[in-house]
Image 1 (tube, helix red, strand yellow):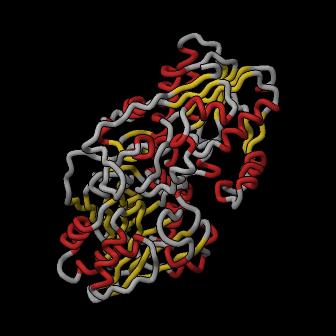
Image 2 (cartoon, rainbow, N blue to C red; image 1 turned 90 degrees about the vertical axis):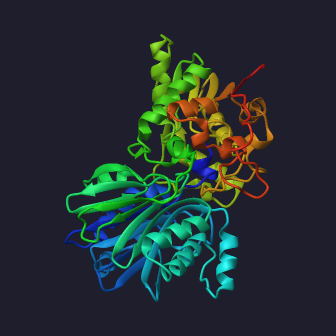
Image 3 (cartoon, one colour; image 1 turned 180 degrees about the vertical axis):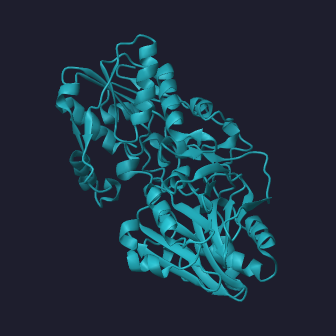
Length: 487
């Protein structure tokens, strides 16, 4: 992500849950969280249960920083859940680290949440009026308190259904209720969640890559509105379809950027989706340049598909690595000042001069958010001797914020919200600029537009959000995808 990786959208959280036959769950959870580390780097945590007592440990930082051997040894029991967090709601401190755990009259509860509620304040106010005291400002604790209250009045299935009726927004949840692990996906399926089978149990995870890490087999995705209950002895799982909706609202950005390319989400291998997006990008706006190169690492699959489609049409386009990534530089989008962010781009990416000198270059990435990094990249390539620099983006222009769990910039900061494609081209200094169309995204995902969440590229949302239009009852606009110097 040209600007997401440095100063734009942040990864959403990752959740996991396991139920095993006769071994402790702590280390499988730990390994699965490592596989989901790309989804959050602020904190990590695990909750387990041994049939008698709940154990928990959360820590700030990366998975490897949050746990040591003693921590894992202390997490007893063959069932448990885990979480890696990047904050999109709530404070950036230990009070919002997950899983959130609580003990109450009906037992113990642990909850991991990926997503964002759009009515968290309303539900919190209602619970506070009923005497609930909150220890954090995050929406995960809101879900936990509401579920705990419902568990006082009924069984687990009924309690989850009542909570789903109360909360609105995006969520994939893994939950422990004593020694039972459950997974829940919101009725629109905005956030991913899947089921895997292990040799001695079952696993729930945000992405199938975590199942692969545990030598498991992907069973299927959790369906939107479905509750999955893992048997405490790891022997199987039960399914309850609690809510049915006419349309889904899958987040297309999972396939464009967030998910690991080796994950399968909603039946689609992310890597192949990105290659198809690249192929469609060539079909819509291919430019005959000497070299096509990715912005590492997010643009690589797009550029591969783009170059392959170009070569099939006998275009003289060479696929090459033209930017070298310094993997020891931290995630630069958290740099505190604009000057620091711009300097960090040069620290992180360096052009390979022999690839670009004296050539026309097409650079491929997944998105442009603020435009500052794109400007830096174009300048770097020109300084390395590129005669022309064309930019192709494997997603539509981001014109609006996300309310569903992506820490997207505000409208004031989003370059496409305030400028035309031609204006953006001039701002970043490229010879031409083209984005992929929304229809091409739907085609690559083999999905109807009405079954995707496209709020960040249309300004219309699949949820009722104060002050924002919904895409369920208004016609979506068509956004012009390209601009060239001299237009």
